[in-house]
Image 1 (cartoon, rainbow, N blue to C red):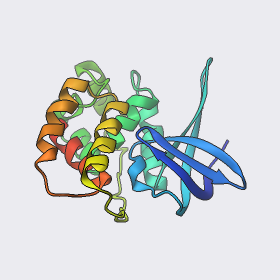
Image 2 (cartoon, rainbow, N blue to C red):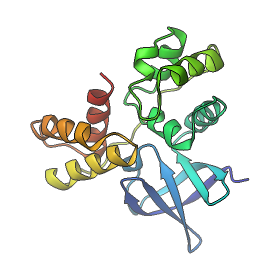
Image 3 (cartoon, rainbow, N blue to C red):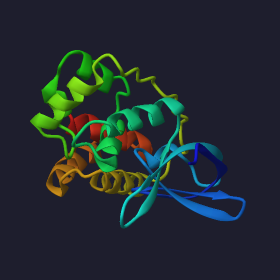
Image 4 (cartoon, helix red, strand yellow):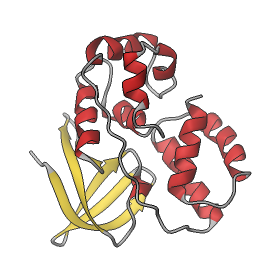
Length: 193
């Protein structure tokens, strides 16, 4: 129903963003909410998912990410939350490479993806994925503690176990001061090793 929203980013939370379009705030769940900055004007590509008990908007920085999300939803056993967790991977081409190489191990590292689901992803999407590397605009560097806390909260919101996120948090705390988005990317890389 919706293709995209043009508006101002009103807020950024670990699970998503709020886009103000003409005075109406749309809550949009995203794979990497820290790609967006509060106050910036942005085009967010959206996919509306309607379930028995809820209606949700899922947002993406690029049309390619939205297309990949929709392709993932065609796989039996993959829901919107699992698709977002896969898209949150630090290497956008990693999914296409894993599918092309029949790399079940890589795919099972994502929350909600077991061996059978990983095999189904490979079977259903082999030769169909072309994941483009999205250009990521650098964000203003917030103070270290809040940036790390936000990144860890985003990892938990993506479905990673709290104990795994805590381990990654210790490793990230030793990293040099950086942005929430950079912490999130580093955390995803560590969780998918």
